Length: 98
Image (cartoon, rainbow, N blue to C red; front, side, top):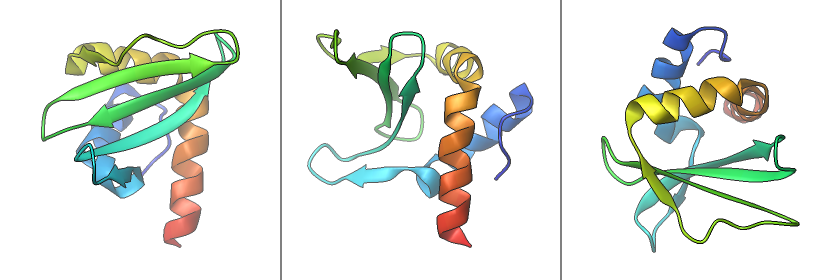
């Protein structure tokens, strides 16, 4: 899996989401967590099935009331805008796989 350098790399990340994600057996979802540099906190992206994604943000001075379900297009935009933090996550996952 490549770090995000193009929109195509985001598609690859989403196709291979389970390879970099943790699994929550209670919520029956895969999820990744990465830094939210704009709000000084963290984003969590959750995948419930093959096409359902949600996001949730929290930090020292804020916490989203609940997760928000997003379209693939919205998620791709979010991942692109946060690619520096997502790339850090991808690199860590690649190191663990090696």
